[in-house]
Image 1 (cartoon, rainbow, N blue to C red):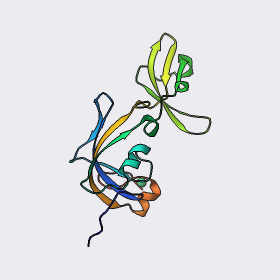
Image 2: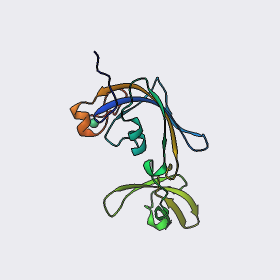
Image 3: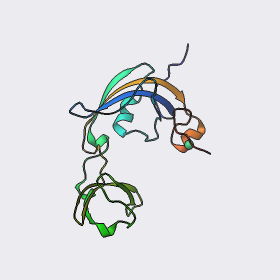
Image 4: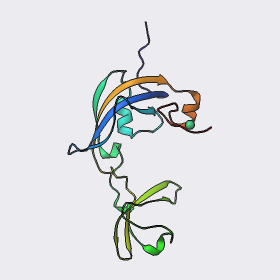
Length: 167
Ligand code: ZN
């Protein structure tokens, strides 16, 4: 008897999915000819999606609804900040949509997006664009394989469809 592979930690999973917002807008998707490849148990996907995928088999389809708290988090108003132009490096073109990377006092990396500019005032937002949203995932499991030791050490999938890098 062949062992039936199920999704669990240290498995590399090929996934077809559609991500929709509450209003039905498609926010992201991966199709069968170009599936999304990730390493399960390595926090490569949001917690609610990872929990919903656990235990699924190849060929299985499922709708997974992820509340904001299990997705990209609730909107944190403290991350909406008004800065002044002088706080940015002189050589950057400040315009709406430009992103900046900063470090929080505890050393976490945070990406801020410029969301509005009024004269000298620059409104920036450090929330993920999908923060505060309930996420509707339609998923289909295409393939499951054992992760290599190296993949598990790196915390991501390698290979033609996974993460490519030189080392
Ligand atoms: Zn790697």
